[in-house]
Length: 153
Image 1 (cartoon, rainbow, N blue to C red):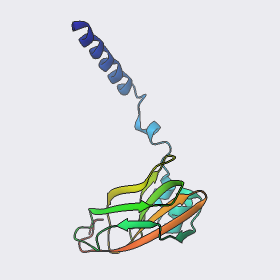
Image 2 (image 1 turned 135 degrees about the vertical axis):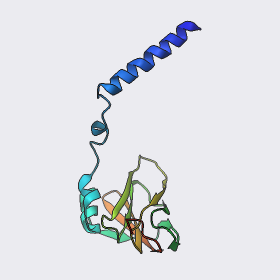
Image 3 (image 1 turned 60 degrees about the vertical axis):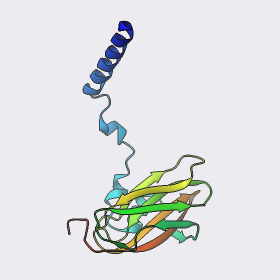
Image 4 (image 1 turned 90 degrees about the vertical axis):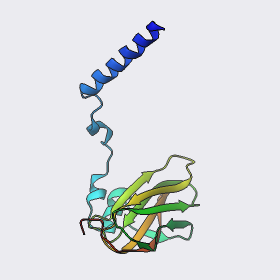
């Protein structure tokens, strides 16, 4: 019994030492972060930086669940579902935000087309879902009216 405890303590100490040594630094984990997409000021720029394409066609196979009126723009619940086959990513955009790309989720092979999150909206506008499948982009949008801004307003 005492031997198992010592093994656990040694393992914990070794893991802590590796973390302190900087081998698990956040910069290594965030290396694939598409900074240009998340700092773009317009929707086409964000899509171009994220996917290499800015032309998305409207699709009825994408459903956005979001409130018609968000009482507080700091916390707006958004759910995106799609029945499009072979999806590679789902991105959520708040078109009137100073930086419109809010979130992007890379999906694994065979993943269900479903994401749910809470976003921040500075003012009323469209919430746009962009689904990448193959080399094509598909989109849908829903208008959300914000009564109290979430980006400092």
